[in-house]
View 1: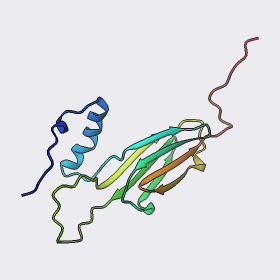
View 2 (view 1 turned 180 degrees about the horizontal axis):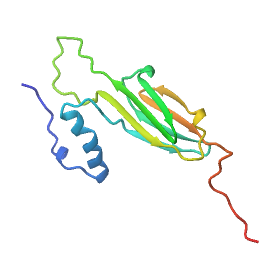
View 3 (view 1 turned 90 degrees about the vertical axis):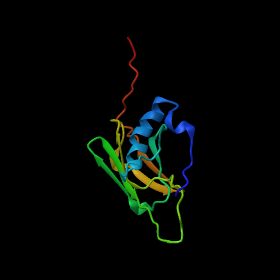
View 4 (view 1 turned 90 degrees about the horizontal axis):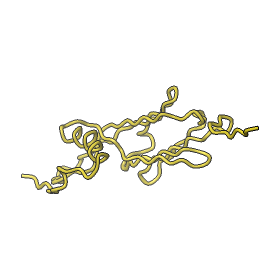
Length: 142
């Protein structure tokens, strides 16, 4: 018999976003699937866009980043390792399996200069803006 933590709020999402996250995340992993959706922050600075993915427990070699047309796809896999036989798991709340996230790139970025680094469980992808491709301009009325 396994002990499973009961949380009465598991069945009532607090927002529409939480409902969508639960639909695409929990239902896949609880039904025996092997995919998860890492939490992501997208940040814009004056010189670049940054995408931060929370993917602890991976190595930098576990990631694949591809640019195709105007789309950036980040994928990888976190494998479950149950090597020690004396461990008896009562609950596993971390996500394992493969993941893939795609982001549409704006027109004012330089896709050839995208860089990524993995630090403390966060994959940080920097997408520099191209100064030559200015999307906003002011027009003076004469």
